[in-house]
Length: 286
Ligand SMILES: Cc1cc2nc3c(=O)[nH]c(=O)nc-3n(C[C@H](O)[C@H](O)[C@H](O)COP(=O)(O)OP(=O)(O)OC[C@H]3O[C@@H](n4cnc5c(N)ncnc54)[C@H](O)[C@@H]3O)c2cc1C
Image 1 (cartoon, rainbow, N blue to C red):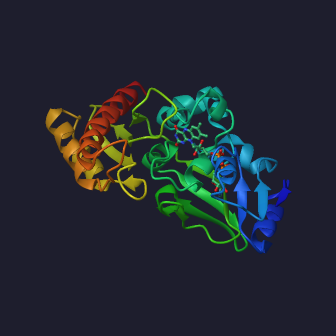
Image 2: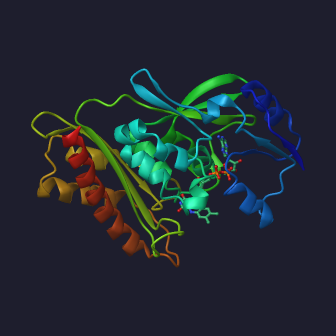
């Protein structure tokens, strides 16, 4: 196995594109190294992207935020302005694992590990985040909901990797939230995760919304019908009921030791409603 730690995007792309066998990006390593130890993966080449400045920066850009794909959850939490603008995204990244894991784990790795239960992904999708990808043909932007195709399957071509995420500008009256259910208090993967991002007008009426669900299908879902269920409402009880119903209708979960189909479907409705209630409170404060 060869380990490279380039300092530029171009070198990283050239290494990944030129590899003969399996080539993997290394960010925090909290998935990759575990899978290598378990003999699930045996890459010929590992390209550590943490020395590439663009992958490690957090900055305001065009009224929104540009967050490097290799920024850790712990680093996100330390950024008070980002936390204020996107509390749901920062909280989701900080639900990943333990304090030790959060010091390594990145949102790029969380997304590219290709797990439908990845915690930061529903929050990013609800936020309308766009992934900026570098590859042999240059750069391109992909909405986060289009990166994952299914378990361990991504829409990235050979040689491509995620450089950063762009979180769009926040209109006044916006708030987001992410909630998950796990069987234990920590260090378990989500049985269901729900991300909600919305904007209210001066009267508290929801003008736009995005809803995303994790761990209830083969990939993290964007659920437009759930968003439509609450737009135009002030999230009164009938709107909450419509939201719950739309979230449940989108679920196509598996049955496993963590939860049955019925349980996951039920919890998806409940968590979506609770996340929306948090998001609207935050929106009214902003
Ligand atoms: C004890 C423990 C607890 C955990 N708890 C949780 C949890 O609660 N919630 C949760 O969601 N996850 C959890 N995880 C999984 C893991 O920590 C997260 O998925 C984490 O975000 C992965 O990020 P990373 O930077 O460590 O990725 P890495 O391990 O470096 O990479 C993961 C995968 O993504 C690829 N990759 C990484 N970065 C990029 C990029 N920029 N572009 C393209 N491909 C890339 C790698 O090649 C690899 O295939 C846990 C893991 C452990 C070991």
